[in-house]
Image (cartoon, rainbow, N blue to C red):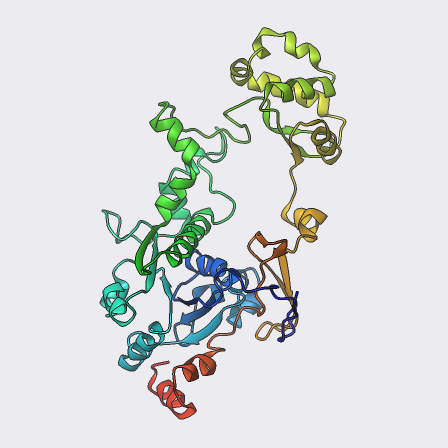
Length: 410
């Protein structure tokens, strides 16, 4: 494996799958940046095209106010490593003309403006395709490019609510409940990245990708949706219980919670033997999976009594060893520190990051290629950090760049 010449660590040992692909990232906050985050780690050159003076809104978001003030908010740092940054004013005629020149060098454009914004700017797909006929144009929006909700603004929590996700999250007392991270933004971005990577494989190239966050989330809810449309079951909030089996869910132990998934009859036998509860198998209410599902609360109480003096982590190890899937309920800091994660290269360390003033760690993609985790060589960029490099590559001189900046075009 080679060493990154910038000093930020190891780089991939061979050209990555999207090596040589240029992506223009016009996106803000999360869904779009997360899409391009995936593409960057797969080897694409991602040029983040940001608004002059302010850039991606995520630069001002995150748990560290000082970094927000520097335009390097934690929310931005999380999704933008490995990208280049330029600033460009789409409303300025010369800025627009420069963008069209940049499009001619690109393979992909990704944007997550409200539907119609790029067309009103005179930079919609049809215009860009005239400059780059084989362009892949990916538009990520809350609800898609048409339909009665096309003009609605969409944020993650709005999509979680209208998609039904909140209605099935929590239990009878707490639902509807928001999922604890921006699942709609993240799923929308992942779906878009998959579509872009697929379109890059098509011959001839060239496509307009309409990625709806709402539909992306619904597509991941296949079991819930299918139970409704095929089996006629009204989706509900089951808390930490697995509605398809029992005992399968979260159980109290002597020092915390454990998830146990005894979904198969043989796992039910192994679990009850392990806990000294073999007599439960003789009770009619627990004879079959369906019986156990109907009586899950009573069964849960029996199992928790047997777990009361045991450690969740010790139980997880012992149950997995006998073939019963189990895992302690852990915090984010705990799982990041665990060797299962810490030793597999999920995180990348960047030293003394410009604009931040100290070291940072960011999450990669969770993918290994031939045993090597995919990484990007450079940390998240400062606003406009690569302007000189990118604009000079289009043939602009230092004087040209300065003149465009004076005019407010870049």
